[in-house]
Length: 146
Image 1 (cartoon, helix red, strand yellow):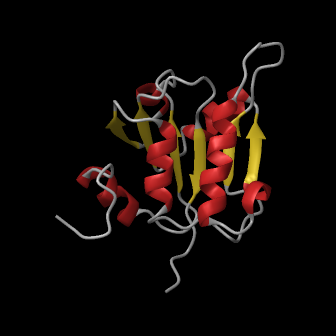
Image 2 (tube, rainbow, N blue to C red):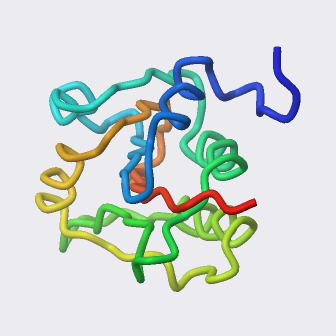
């Protein structure tokens, strides 16, 4: 056991977070995201039974966001005409604001197919059991300064 590590962070996820360097991308994916097919060139970590919000919160306790890019956080844009609400985005924004002073300004929305293409380049994908729709969030790792 280690002190200060959120219990939701598995040993495998902790190892991956440590391995990642500045500018590497991590995707926290909802339960509908095709994690295995998009993550053929990435490390896919299963976090079934956990929500994307709780995983994001635990990760950001250990993982700084990139300050050298304007938008280090990306959401999958809702497909035009899709009658879906995305209240989880508000939750994501509150979580990010706890760890990054830039708040909402670090977020961007990326068109669905482009999001899929970017996810293929992610260092790792955390496949959660999140049931909310459009609850996929990509974060770019920054530099640890302490």
